[in-house]
Length: 70
Image (cartoon, rainbow, N blue to C red; front, side, top):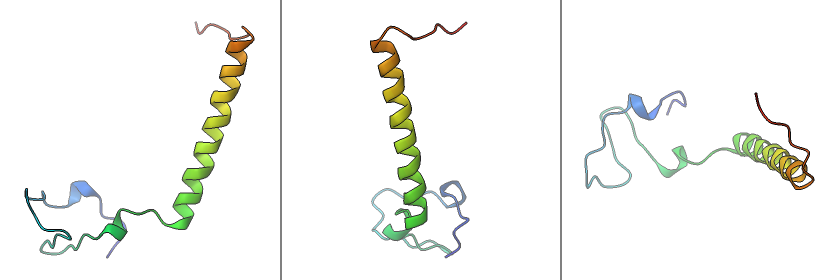
């Protein structure tokens, strides 16, 4: 299955459709919703970066060193 298909490109899933749902040209499987190792590595790295950024902001706020946005 091509990996460049977006949910918006698929026909609307009818209510009560069995899983996995078969469409005229598409077969949707749970594997299509699970990120691969490279994507998961990227996501994990970005989450770690943002957690460190938030920790820095909290530290600045705790020591009353935050600057106001203007």
